[in-house]
Length: 310
Image (cartoon, rainbow, N blue to C red):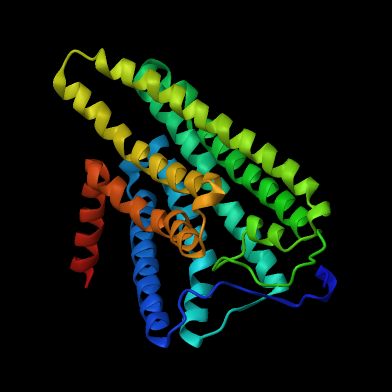
């Protein structure tokens, strides 16, 4: 039996047992992280440098790219280090910092996706009021609210989680620090506060989900009333990337945390955690750039100018 005051480090789940597989996982994680850094970095640069992209939709896309960069830089480097050096250790403070950062960027991404849904709703269902409802000041306030809410949310969860006494060792069944794994090694009678926080988080997340579903119902109804096929195609092309990113984020995270215990296994949990924490930051830039002609044109122009300067 041990408590949190005597724990100086945690043991993360090893991605593989053999040295060859560890090096393979290192290479895979390196490739995914480089793809995420390149894709999100290009989006940030294109939106920041392209004055014609200084619109609410691309402003929120820039914020989304920042959250993707933050989330993948929180979990992947430590996993790569552990695979390369064949270790599982993470310090107590490092685990707390990783948990806080991961919650901060993931919750910020969810809030930003909800705001982006509102942007698409106003753009299609209330186009005459778009400039009023989504002016530069309103966009800045909404983005600031998303980041501030994510900060408070992650701070509350992290402080409460690490205030729990830990009675069942220091081994975590995940390749990064997350709340469910820490709750498993805490004293069973002392985690009621975290359960209430998780219930509140579930209600908040479900509320955002309901808002997204309701908004898209209104959006699709409005799009289907557009008389021209070209107008419908243009409206759908601005919504489908956001809908794909939301679906990828919600489906993987929901299945990870809401799957029945009967089908739970370490290998399945590991695969699902990679799906919702590592894959979306790498795929989001590709999803947005494939469907958005303005963004593709800005990226081509930026890359052409960079090559010309060389």
